[in-house]
Length: 174
Image (tube, rainbow, N blue to C red; front, side, top):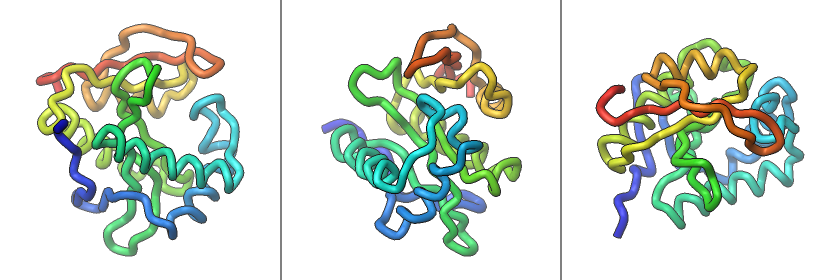
């Protein structure tokens, strides 16, 4: 049986846990924001039904692979801030560390806090030797975060209808 990632993690300010039914409405609101979705996938906003399917897909990812995206909530009030964790579906360019946060929570260090812990788990617990982030070249904030976590630019690829830069996190260098 493959090693599973923990389904619940607590950091200084955050709880990272499985998505729940009550997360749909705030997640759908987040995914309907053009600024939030600008660099995600093909850069299109999601309707509530697509956001529902996205949550279902993330939960299915956990069932099939034993890891995936966590819902990221603030510990002091339980507010859903976004998601962080792993993508590795069939045909994906590699085991990806990714995240998405509502715009009102940008610039507060939440993504860094969540991704630091997710990267640690990927390397130390899941024993992933190759972890990447796929980032649109115009997404300066995500490039800055990837570099701060030890990511190094590897190559630029065509991905979901546009260019994406592959940032590689090497085991033991984080």
